[in-house]
Image (cartoon, rainbow, N blue to C red):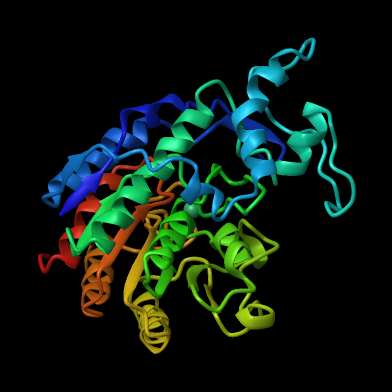
Length: 342
Ligand code: ZN
């Protein structure tokens, strides 16, 4: 399988993560790259660098205001006397629809949903190339050059809205890839198997009927992202019925997960999908530090096989999945399962 990655994605190296009021090391570490890369190579992936498709495909789903913020905020932040080393908001507006703040602190509050998306010197460059990695993956699929591809997009993307970062995510790589496929004449669906609901992706396409969004995740009643991901969120306007959330109780294992995956894949087929973007979080693993669901290594292989059974062209876009003893092997297993292995 073809795989895509750019070395500039190493440049995002977040330090801080505030969890339940405690400052902890940020789990979205660059070291994930070497683990995931080895895991993909274990499934026979051959890596190439992405092309540079420019800002167009990114700006197709993100607001220009937000992209200006991401690209310019760090040097502006550093000019604040006594500022910390990373852009982390200390204000969160309850209502974002009125005026747009001029100040760096105000804009950080406007564009960052939580404290889990700190921005430092290399963040924009890494996020930009993470998105380009997904775009090249979409182009490999749309050109027919590959029937399936793996984009090692890191930092991840599915918590990023059109104009808001959150949960380790800045640019919505899966959403950008799906929109790229749509622009090339496809009818794409996004299947999000990350343990966390793909709230940014849902928000981005919530009023649209030309890209289907489906997410299987730990029930957000007691799990990040809390405010999104409930079963009753089905889309709005033209998009009503084109968003499907399948929340699962904490600790759900392989058997129940695979049954739910069949529900998701039935919806994907009924949409008339002709290209599938899999938002590939590996944090549903029983070994993941977030402990949301309990998928085994064998379970990941079976998820890969079930996705392959759709017969669709598939772009896997890396989302979450944090450092544990099985992070790499879980990637190997799902990609191998997809390719007919075990
Ligand atoms: Zn996640």
